[in-house]
Length: 103
Ligand code: TYC
Image 1 (cartoon, rainbow, N blue to C red):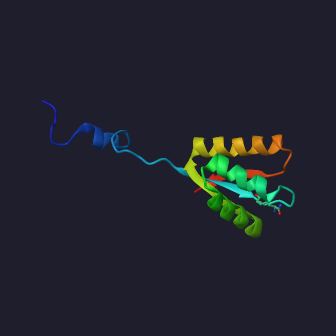
Image 2 (cartoon, rainbow, N blue to C red; image 1 turned 180 degrees about the vertical axis):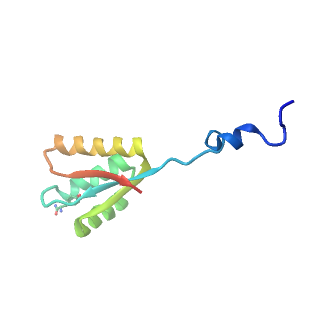
Image 3 (cartoon, rainbow, N blue to C red; image 1 turned 180 degrees about the horizontal axis):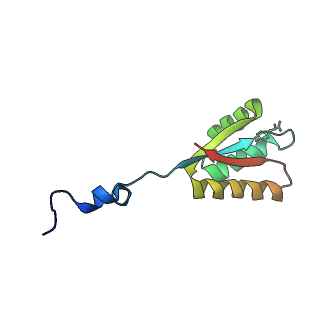
C-alpha cells in the first residue's frame, strides 16, 4: 500500500510540486548625447506600458544618471522588450542602447 501520509513527490522532487517564481531581469536604457528626449519618452511609453509622466521620469533619470530601469520581467519578456527597443531605435537611426541584467 502506498504511503499516504508523506507523499512521494514532495520528498523526492520539491520543484515539481512547489510553484516557483521566475528569475527576474531588469531592462535598462543607457544615456547618449544624440537620441532626442522625445523619442526616448515615446519608446518607454510604447514598450514598457508607462504613461507620459512615468516615461518622462525614467528618461530624465537615464539622462542625468547615465542608466535607468524601464521595467522588470521574466527573462524571455525582458529580452523581447530589449530587442524591440533596439530595432525601433535602429529604424529611427538613433544610437539609443537597451540592455538586460539580472534583477
Ligand atoms: N541625453 C539625451 C539628450 O540630451 C536624451 C536621452 C535620454 C538619450 C535617455 C538616451 O537613454 C537615453 N537628447
